[in-house]
Image (cartoon, rainbow, N blue to C red; front, side, top):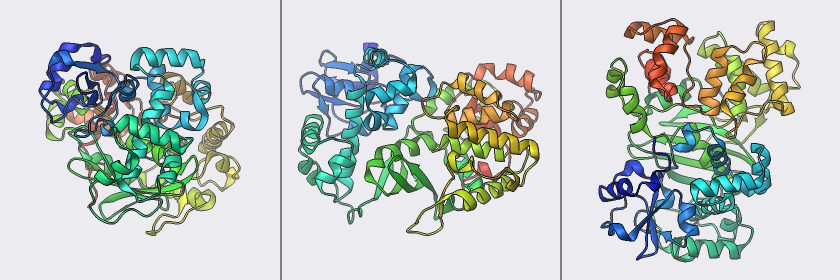
Length: 493
């Protein structure tokens, strides 16, 4: 855990001198003599310690008057892992800002989602990140603008509004201030590797902290893919996306040092949100070194970690969708769960056009599912009740599953629903809510792996034994699952 690391000057200086990429995103180095800020792994000669000051966010650097380094491009670093493992107000606010809530709903909308006053949120973000929600959202808009400038041939006016700016003047001023270049100069400096993207179609590189083992990550997504909504094709996982301004289609493929991402968007204003959700889906902002080091301390898990380090938790781009699919998957095989989901998609999903073919629908929204006739569901009556209660609560807004969710409170709400036991609540907590400590002691695959490894296999005893793995028990589940030969554990051929 490195919370507040920017206040430990000696440790930050050591990280900068060693150009340690593990600390990228944890803090940023601002250089007093040049007026620029860098990531810790910047390849330039490190400045003298007395000329370095450290900030917890790029937004704080920009607010202090520093501009982004043109060599290490600190604005493109993976996000802080803190927003993955923390469940407090600041972490929940940061996840919402990354999802574009401030741009769409303003700071009052952010506050309303979190249940706090705008003053409380601004005070806590300033105290920990050195910048308020508007400054943090502005820094995100600048990153999106740079991406569009460098990877498309779109007119600057379209880029300005697609990135979330309210005016072209604000766009121009922000780009000049943050990058010390005009938008046209940024575009002129960008490498040309081929023809520009057509409007609405973008090819991006999503960075991550190494190591990253793609086997269980993409294996799980491919093995459980719902026909029409998801597919594995030509070495990439493809799926449809429901976004604030329209829909999109994404293709994600693992590469040695990045994830190749190809996005087709109905509305470019959804770019920031689409990127954020894809990063969340693949757990790209995790800190695998910290996670694996703690799990490796257990002599039983150590050989599993050493064999294939860097496992991530496969998550979701739509929390409500995953909850519905978790209910469909209760006490049935992976194939049966896919069949149930595919029927819902065909009957109630929203059709989309896929330029490459193969994908046909968005997964049905809770509002659409709440209107279906329960008798049409090919499942036991008790599970029908579970399904209809869940979708009705989601549609009414009584149950909110999202990046802003308070993990313990939401888990308790799920357990209050009929037909929801610990396994269903915890798998939703792990893969939809993003709780890194969610644990599945009743899961058949986890219990089988525990037994084969000599660990306790009863839920109570296994939970007690797993206390040493906290707060990374969701990652321990991935290593335990990986001992099995199920297709979810293997990168598709």
